[in-house]
Length: 226
Ligand code: BJW
Image 1 (tube, rainbow, N blue to C red):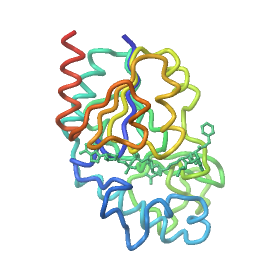
Image 2 (tube, protein in one colour):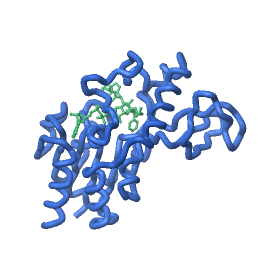
Image 3 (spheres, helix red, strand yellow):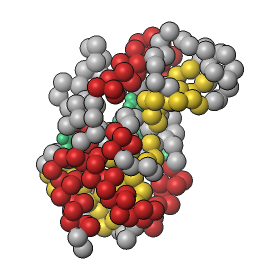
Image 4 (cartoon, rainbow, N blue to C red):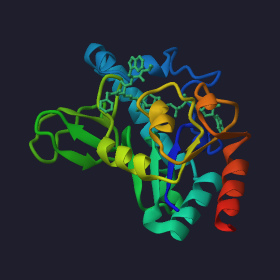
């Protein structure tokens, strides 16, 4: 059985990583959605760097939860028959043991040099404009996908969705495209696991509501016992 899983901010919420659209989602008085744009970066790069530097530093204070761990267990059982796609820029899937994760919106632990196009693993801050290790230019930005930019690995994701037996979306609000459209691209059965019904819940064949740390391990157990 071939399975595509899409995760969003809700899977990391119980690890202490704030989601984008839940109640107290303001950062320094800004809606994170207005900070995650090329326009915000052009207008106030210091502000945008601070936003990402803080989130990168916060990674060391959070741990994967039972939902991330259950998906790592699923990968061990299904191997190449599982494609795990995440919209999250944190590294909690990898730290739970998942080895093949597609980060369609990039990663906090990576920097992109807009001068020479090199990408580097990056764990420190960027706000002080460190030089690019390859070309020396002080043009590094977070290697994340902002509104108006093209998400990573779209061809591979599209092919996997068109061939899968089951598509499962976990902890995502269904408000950001193209991820919100994956349920319509998927050929097989579709299942949503989310705290509340998402905006796109009606598009799924089945939906279950509750915290990811309960729903995801239970669903993985169910799938593996078939
Ligand atoms: C729990 C839980 C618990 C809480 N357990 N669940 C008009 C119409 C249609 C589309 C567009 C349009 N105008 C513009 C567009 C396109 C645009 C878009 O979608 N805009 C919308 C605002 C309408 N999209 C783009 O620009 C994208 N690019 C694009 O489309 O390029 C064209 C193209 C596509 C494909 C091929 C070729 C070309 C780029 C989108 C980039 C999004 N970037 C961000 C920032 C990334 C870096 C960073 O992290 O800072 O990605 S924005 C932000 O939203 C982030 C997230 O990954 C993304 C999705 O958020 P997510 O994960 O769903 O989080 P939340 O907070 O919204 O929801 C959390 C959910 O969890 C909730 O449902 C809770 O209930 C639940 N939950 N606790 C289970 N314990």
